[in-house]
Length: 350
Image (cartoon, rainbow, N blue to C red; front, side, top):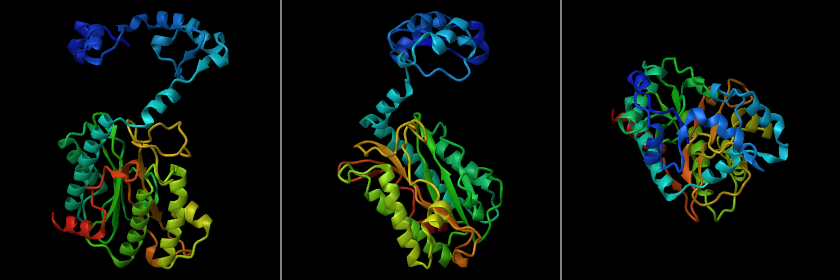
């Protein structure tokens, strides 16, 4: 590891540095050096037969060495320059038991924050205030930070997948869709719940919510080694299930309308140190024990008379974090209420 050396003047202003010796003691580095030596080290390392490196698009000041840049860009045959991140991602995609324990804690913290947020929500508060409530509850329970900028979308704002303005008032009679999660010991949680601002689902909201919940639960059941399935396979199943659920409540939709308008996103992604973890690895690979994924079906009904009028303007997503098991999945976020009766009970007990 190459790190900034101890420097009393710099530390007076910016706080203590680990330093070269501290890196060995605290982070178990086999070798540690002053970062000023990195250009010389890299110049020598690039003479190796194979080099595993992910050169940044814009070299920082430390690497602005014409000789080094030349070696990276032209001094090695392309076959000798190999990507490092894909190797690291392969190591990250299956979690150790210790990592699973941390992610259990991360999921429990965020789930409790959702309970408190549901209890607190009422008409007249703003999306920004609800965001602040979630942030507060996560941090007070041990999260160091929110894992990403949350979606706090009241009413038709939920029709935008990545709505992050979070600046509107929450209105009586609307739902609020919240996609949020805290980070604990660097591991992310990623939960979405949708609940009524006034604590009670209307009948159309209840019907549409139950349809999404049925798909969520069915897809979680597929999260096992025994099923011999991939994330893409679960997504295909979710589309089929969603169409069946919508038909039960009066939708008559084409495959195009379902997958491009009503349910335009994937059912899930890998989860870990990043929210969208191991991003280079295909979702077509078969799921293995101790992989951690999200399951997040959703429905977003625009103001369009191709769809039943009573459901227009409603957006619902239900997202859980799931550990792949041999024959039984483990839901890290199971304590975040998602059954209608549990949500209404929670909202009523503020």
